[in-house]
Length: 276
Image (tube, rainbow, N blue to C red; front, side, top):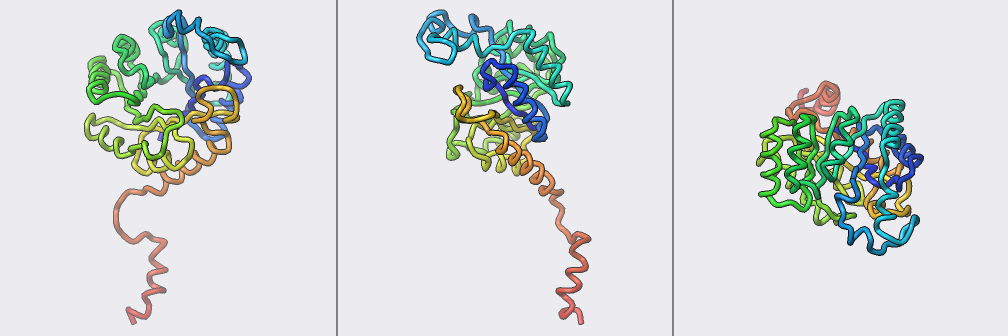
């Protein structure tokens, strides 16, 4: 299973925090870290950007959102640091200009955030790169998922779907993990999970259902400023989850029924009185 540590915007615009989170993910045994890239004036309206919002960096939405965006030099530093510690990185683009920005880096993967699943021009642009793409299905109808899948198949771009519930954090009762099998049967493709639950049980349950990938938000401390922190795992939780996932993978086995070699001497001992 491919495990993605979603840093997103939990770095709070601080490259030092980003590096700490990258190291946490690497040390925990994750396969990749993921960020989010937005061109603020394309993603948000002028009215929203001018509206009030208290943050550590000012009193408007613009001040808050601009502080959370890394620039080219920041991503070059991220790229270099990920290569140094030995982990892959990629990002979800929220607008066409951000897709072009990310094309400057040699990332191995792309991600379609649930919010962007209905943005057909962006889907075509991402799919045209022919990179393996993770497509989250949160807050999307079957018809909308159909259109996204058709675009990626039309562009002949490899992809997998990620079952997702887009609430932050999400309630366990809303997890609906059986959707994983529904998506697999419907679209005949690998299916992962983008999990926003604050605990570990939902992710572990999905692992037992044979998901192809798992994405979890991570943070240094859930009490930090930020809208995604509450739905994130702290370092100890991430280590526990990755360890459990790797054990679940080992435990799944082949499904073949039979006596294993380690059982044979035990069977001889415990059945000795039957065979005499």
